Image (cartoon, rainbow, N blue to C red; front, top):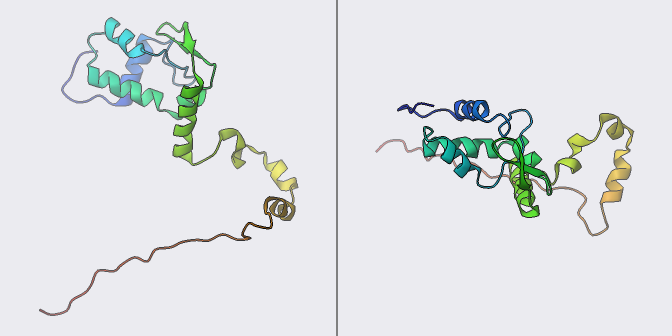
Length: 157
């Protein structure tokens, strides 16, 4: 990849990496990458600037699909797509934290969107509410609002 003055977009950088190493970089089915893959790429490709390589790897590894694949015990791959280690529990927890922060959900498997609409229609909302509320819990919710301060209007000098 020849060096140009303007910055390459992350998608252009990703296309370059996926053409060069299709076993490691796949947009539709991302696989957890080997720890230290940046140094492997650097040793094989001196044309790609360090800044572009860092941006490309950062964009790829922060994608939702990639983070979802980081489950404890999952196999990591090297540039050829060959197994090169496993995802640790700490790495999986970090990926879950990124997804939780991004989507504000406790777990993808426990989200209401994962339930089938037919199952939701069958459940009785009054029974669900009574079962969830205990005597010590409030029976409503509080919405806090802030008043917008208007700029003062001065008329005259």
